[in-house]
Length: 420
Image 1 (cartoon, rainbow, N blue to C red):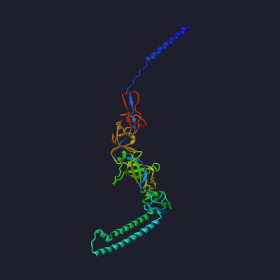
Image 2: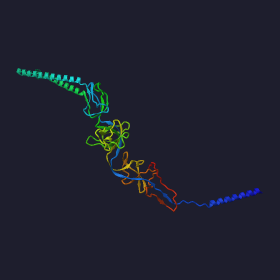
Image 3: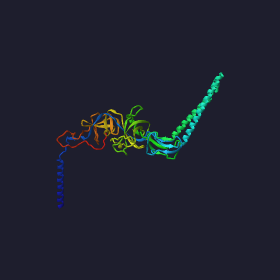
Image 4: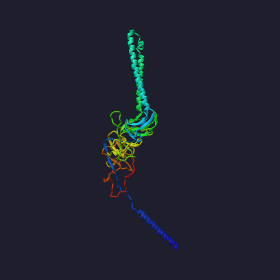
């Protein structure tokens, strides 16, 4: 009896629970979607575009070379008997300064013999001219007429020509002996810096031997590699009075940050660099070793660094003026040569026509105008017409609205790089 009662009670409780649960589902309020949304504009920074005439700066890397570079060689053979104290590696010499003296004794003797031979030839010429005068008088007294060739023989014309040629040969021998004697004294061909010396006192030298290496100190060249596409923006002299583009030269690894040297584009070489296939230009730098007291950027001569042959330097070449272009920081040029412009509070993605890009700026001929505001902030989500706002300027708007709180927001910004 108790089992039946227990089962009856359990069934009643289950029925009551099912009924209560059904009532809960039947009386649950229905959720409805309101019409209020809020769109938040992306916070950005902008820069105002400037237009006008600008000079681009073309960056190139180059190697320092000497404009005048010679291997000193003797033109006569002999023993080195004197050497200038300045003729040492690292020394400086002036044009015409004596560097080495080859023993001149043999060459003085040769000159004395040549002069003696010349005097003998000149004496023979005087004697022969006297004989010719006698022969002319005898021929006139004879009173006969001979054929021209016979007359020349009678008047000793061939003998006179032979003696005259001997005089000329003797004079040439004297001149050669004088030259050889002069060449025993080896002088600096120009104001020079001594890079190496290969002989010393007592050395035996012959024509073609290397005595040392000298480089001129008036001008050095920086051989800079420039892309072919940028050559047309440079001023390269064509042999007239035109001056080349100004160049600022820096050695980042060896010089202080604010120190540089000035140069000028001097020549365009006629071939391309072997590996990079870029054009090469010669940049001339006056007083490369700063021996004339040229002041550095701060005006202090002591701050002017010397150029070292073979060093690798940076050359910033001033290009020709670009007229009627917009200059914009190249970091604000986006993917596929586009620019983000803030136009009436919305994002406008513009394709631009870039004339040239240098290390810092892009020079634009079309696609953006002076006074327009270019977005400088990098955005992670880029959509044409997206709402934008500036710091301190309300950029959001409400649509619809029933007094309900906003349910969603759109628009994101990020410090990462964006693309169009």
